[in-house]
Length: 100
Image (cartoon, rainbow, N blue to C red):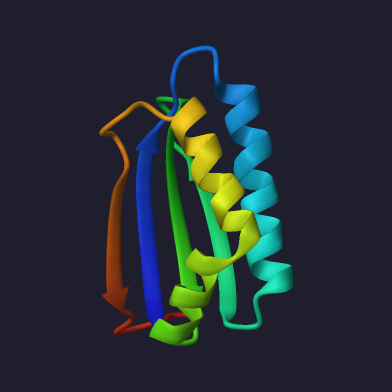
């Protein structure tokens, strides 16, 4: 399994547009992509403009399919409008442990 961990900062005044965009991206990823096992979105309790996503994909091919999906292209457009430039950090990792 492949995990994608994303951390980013939303521009002041852009929270509503960002929230709408990430809600759509997460929903489409999870419902339209069979290789997306889950897509969690978390907001920092001390900074409501700082978000972290934890996405889990079946394999690298599923992650590549996610990045090629039409909703991902719309998401990238939203990032350009709503996210502080240079604040997004992506980590791709192989999942080692999972506690349910």
